[in-house]
Image (cartoon, rainbow, N blue to C red; front, side):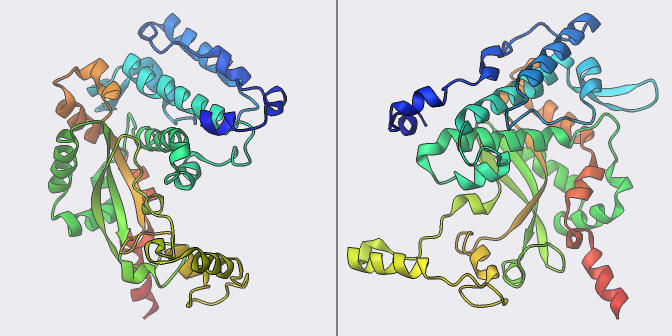
Length: 353
C-alpha cells in the first residue's frame, strides 16, 4: 500500500492527509484487567470516545448483543439462575480479543481505504475483492480478519440455545457426521492440531451440479456439511481464491491477447437467460476455481493465541476449545444455515405433492 501511494503525484499528499483523525487516539494494546466496576467504566468511556472521534470513518467495531455482559462478567455459559459454567474468557481476555483487536483491525481498514472509492465496502467485500492482489495484501488480511473475528464472537452467548432446541439443524448435522459428538470431536481435534493461528469452520457446501443451475439463493439445492480450516486471516469463501483468466498466455502471443481483451469488452450487456457464456449464472460460476463449490459458513472457532493465552495459558488450547463448544448459540447457527441444510427444501417439495 505504501508503494502504491508513493507513486501518486506529490500534490496529492497535501490534498489528502495520510493519517486520519481517529488514528491519533489509539487505545493502548495492554490495559489493566477490567474486573472492577470503575475500570470497566473507564474502558467503556474510552471505547465511546474512540467511536465519537470516528463518526466519519466507514469501518467501526460492530456491536455484539452481549457486549456489556462480557465486559462485566466475562464469557461463560449460564447453567442456572445463580451458577455459571466454565469460563471461556475473562473480562480482560474478552477485552483483548474483541475490543482491542477488532478496534485495531477497523482502524487499519480506515487507514488503508481512506479516500478510495471502495471505502464503503464491507470487510467481506474487501476481502473478496483484494484476495488475489499482492499490492493490497495488507488490506485483504485486515478485512478478512475483521470479518472472521466478528463471525466468531457473534456466535457466542451466555445463555445459548442448545442443539436439542434446534431439532432441524441437529437432524441435518447427524445425517452428515453420524452424531453430534462426532462433529464436536472433529472440530475440536482439528482446531487443537492446527500448527499456527487460524480458524476452523463449519460450512454448508452446495453440490457443484446443483450450484450451476441457479444463481443467487441457496434454496432448492443439494449439499452437505463440511469442516474447513483457514490459516492466519484466510477466508473460507472460494471466490477469494480464484480470478478468471480465460486465456493461457504461455502459448499465446501479444496479438491473440489483444484480441481476447477486445472480445471481453464486447460482451453484451443483456444477461437474460439461464444458460450460455454471457448469462448471469455463467458469470457467477466463473468467479469460482475449476471444481469449486459455493459454501455458506455457519460457525467458526478462533485459534489465534491472543484469544486464549490470557485465560488458558500455553497448554490450555484444548480446554479453551472444549469450553467454546458449550458457549455456541446454536439458534444463531440455525439462522445462518440455508433452508435446504435444515430440510426445508424436502418439506416444501413434499407439501407441493
